[in-house]
Amino acid sequence: MRYVVRDLPLESIHKDAFKAAEATHCARDQGKYWEMHDRLFANQRQLGRDDLAKHAQAIGLDMRMFERCIASGEARGRDTEGSRGGRSGSRSRGTPTFLIGVSSPNSPR
Image 1: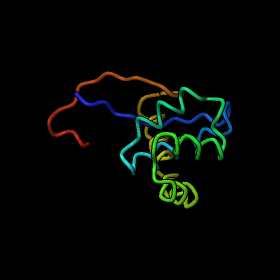
Image 2: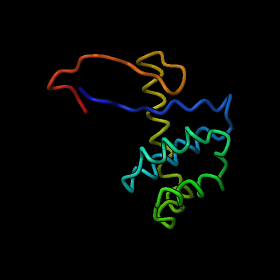
Image 3: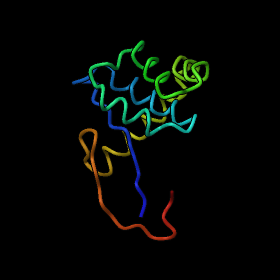
């Protein structure tokens, strides 16, 4: 069994959704995806640019790396790709969405 996470940020109801998704990917680069994910879900009213930096610091990220990742937009494509794939293949409309399925040993990762 695999647990796969895809971002489906809904900017129509939350203006900071895409930037928050990027922050989780920047945290993943430092091995702290779930720490950032959990912190952002627990603090959904504090997702502005300054707030994201505070969350990153609180979970112990290297702030230079995090700031560089956020500023460069290098993580932006990751959440856009997940969003496109998640919406088209599963009819998902938002986050979180949970799907249960069967995969074969030869399934792509």
